[in-house]
Image 1 (cartoon, rainbow, N blue to C red):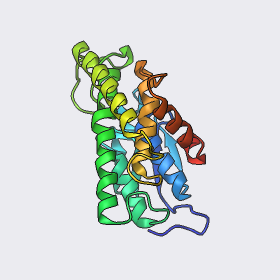
Image 2: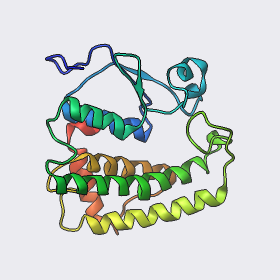
Image 3: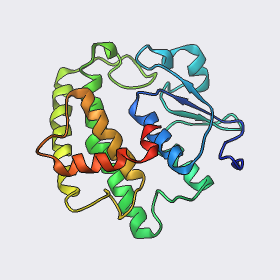
Length: 221
């Protein structure tokens, strides 16, 4: 699959939800690459991801989903980003050498497991709109567990403090330049607000970091 000179992708579509954190990560990544492709909005909160039309495209019922030229799909955010990293290597966002690539992967995963996972647990186990849907996608009905919401909030707060420590004296999270790890960190900082967790006076490094990333045009994708 090649890109047209204008950065557009032929015969592809990204199924997206504008407010959701995982689709946002992909949109920011694509914006950094200068890649544009058609997008179709799917409202998770309204349950549109569980309707027959969407399940016929992706039986897992998750977002984002990239529909490829040949009809196959990719439906994990980082898998989609890695695909486009291989299609269009510059600007490099996954690491230029073995050590940098490993460091980017390490911090990317920490942001997912320590940050996004726990924020999502707090959100989906605590929001009435997700009653019976505490886990994303089209799996079996999953009851909310208030204790998991409380635990997720507690662990997410610890993640935020750890991120503050990591950013001491640093402009970027994993390397001396912007990488995909910064995309995930930035999105997680905003996602944390959904559970009432915000960087404040105790997090000057995060506040400065967030402002730096928000100043990038891609942050508005």
